[in-house]
Every structure is written in C-alpha cells, then in structure tokens.
Length: 116
Image (cartoon, rainbow, N blue to C red; front, side, top):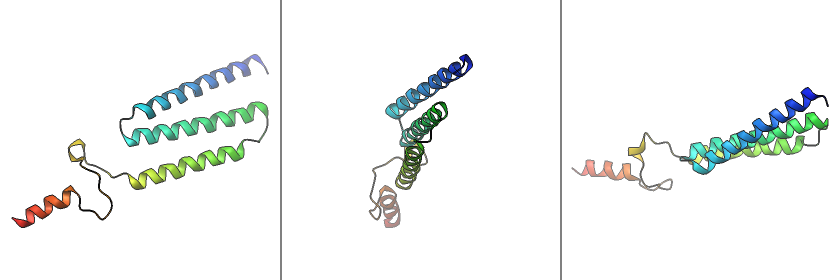
C-alpha cells in the first residue's frame, strides 16, 4: 500500500473509532429511548462500514453475510422499538405505562369528567 492509502486507512479507522465511542456514550447516557435507539443504529452502521472498509482493503467478500445480518438486526430492532414505544406530547404528559387494553390515566380523567 502506498503512503496515501495508509493515511486514508488510519484516518478512516480513527473516524470510525470516534463514532463508535460517541454512539456508545449516547447509548449509555440516554436519556430517552429514542436517543438509545439512534445510538444503536449508528453503532451498527459504523460496524458495517468498518467491515466494508476491511473488505476493500483486503480485497475479499467474506463479510457480506455478516454485514447483511447486522443490517437486518438493526432494521428489525428499530421497527420493534418504534411499535412498542408510546408517543408523548411533552414531559408533563408522562404517566404510568399501561398495557394495551388497560385503562390509562387519560381514561380515568375522562371518566371523572363524565361523572360530574
């Protein structure tokens, strides 16, 4: 490899490492589920980019199956979390989490208003 190629490899590796560390910190700190989910997606995407870079540098295609599995895991994980996380209007509307079909705080307030 030429000197320019080594510089590009080191620069790319450094950028991917910084991205992995930043995503890991965001996943740990949070504070919301959305922050953690985005950090998880960034982390997995960065791993896929690293594997792709390895395939380019070493001129092989052995990692394609692994890259596809990681991408599918990220997509299915994001869809699953998106389906099970409830949207709130703001911090003041956060209440106890209820299961589907159970009466929630909004139902209790509505029933109280109807009783008046």
